[in-house]
Length: 138
Image 1 (cartoon, helix red, strand yellow):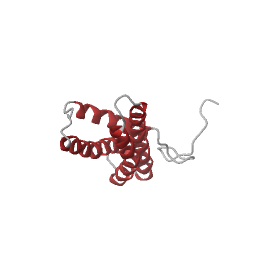
Image 2 (cartoon, one colour; image 1 turned 60 degrees about the vertical axis):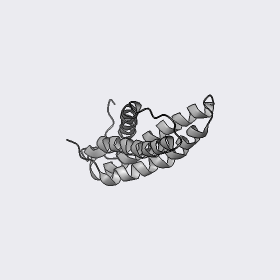
Image 3 (tube, rainbow, N blue to C red; image 1 turned 120 degrees about the vertical axis):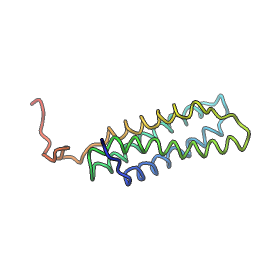
Image 4 (cartoon, rainbow, N blue to C red; image 1 turned 180 degrees about the vertical axis):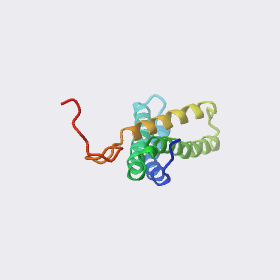
């Protein structure tokens, strides 16, 4: 079973939140039919991927097997923080909360975080086995 690098998750989550929170706020404040609402959704999804990539890069520094698990945890953690704040704000203004959509969206955020971590690569010149990269197919 792959381990999770706590430092990598922290760095990735903070990075994701720095992108996701402003975009989520803009999305909440935008009118329902505004293109800004759709754009903010795209930026939120990109934020989860960027956070996952940062977590993947950090995890590669110590344990290459922790890359994907750390990205997954980053997406889930960033989503949880944003969702808790969003639920509190919706309940405070008596807006509806889609309770069934929350776990589905968390799975999406975690998957996007893991995909971002998958895109992280070891420093050039080294692969997972610690050997120099070789040209393949030539």
